[in-house]
Image (cartoon, rainbow, N blue to C red; front, side, top):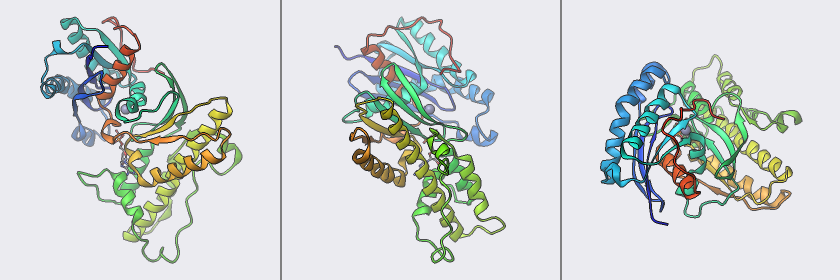
Length: 363
Ligand code: KG4
Ligand code: ZN
């Protein structure tokens, strides 16, 4: 029952992260070193460049996280790292560093599944954490996935994107509408602000027709538990064909896209919950909405309305509560890796061998 501490490393995509968390849910340090400039230069994550950045930044992140927590490696009780899934060249950086630290200091070593860590984040961040089973919708630039968390070790993907992540769709539409990016706000946040502004002529008196919500046109489509955003992005591109995009178009385009994207997320989430309950699932305890897009206020409002309505009309009449972890802990970070390791240690799971390989593809 003694409090213990875990030092965790994460480098599965473009962020180099290190953090120390204790078993009383205290975050003692949280370091995230980003590679925005590299991504801008290469138009995405370029594996070899990302690897070089991690090789430079992971040792730095370790040093900074120990300093921030005012600790030495011997003050921590276990080392955790992201074992997969992710890019091989990127994963190697945190895996090798974590194994070396664990071997040198004779500490237990725990390799974590990246998505398990995302899914378990609310157990660290929420005042009243949801009990198992609960659902997490991870809606960001990197993921768009609804996962049923049945227990610490049992997960089921109930709804996944067929093409593009919802955050990427917001970013693409924002770029198409020439919404000016800023250093503090993401394209999606700016788009949602435009969407809330009053409509300008000619659309104030003559609004454009609503965009079709993806996978909603027929019974067959409605029965599918998938997200899809690429068609919606194309339909925004067609809205103002051969027209100049001015302030009126920016507002109208943002408004129409946001409504359709949010309705799609909400409708499929509702269908997924319904289908799980029909399949015999009982006692669903909450819906955790995380990731950058989870900050969207229309999404929050519509999810709340959907859950209220669902509670009245569903087979179980169950009340499902929405949870929103803080955005900083929904993007990639090592705090969530430490948290997953702490939960596994509390569950009685042992440290692993130091020679386990990384798992770039891990279901
Ligand atoms: O989780 P996140 O911060 O990072 C990664 O995906 O790695 O998500 C970022 C995404 C971006 O695509 C951004 O445009 C979108 O979340 N986003 C939003 C809002 N705030 C951020 N999308 C819609 N509405 C928002 N308020
Ligand atoms: Zn992630």
